[in-house]
Length: 124
Image 1 (cartoon, rainbow, N blue to C red):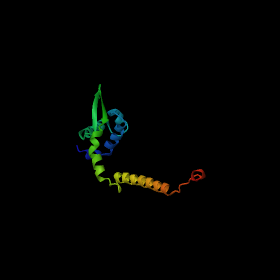
Image 2 (image 1 turned 90 degrees about the vertical axis):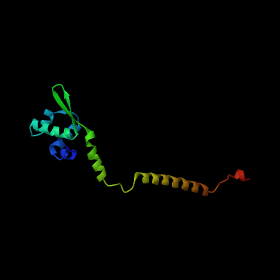
Image 3 (image 1 turned 135 degrees about the vertical axis):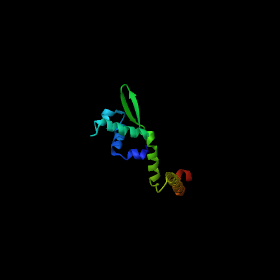
Image 4 (image 1 turned 180 degrees about the horizontal axis):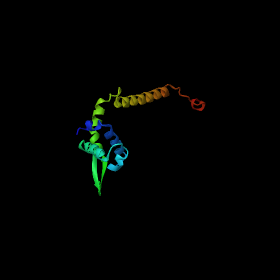
């Protein structure tokens, strides 16, 4: 199943939110929904087919956990759709460097323009 098709269902999105907090059994996941355990299992199978969850057999129980690697296509799409920042980080770094350089140059110019005071003893 396609990741985006799997995410289209609100129950599956809710299951992913719950699994983001940590692994859970089907019975625990079903208790938070007004649908049957077999229906939750069906949603979990769809999420598994999309690469979003992994089932681990623990004794007689199946524990499901989020597989974050399955979210890579979603992250890639969101990154592609996100607007580019109006100014790049590199430009900000260059601006910071120029501000520091200008500050140093200004301080040096001010020091060179200050009159040199000599003590009376040195001039005598």
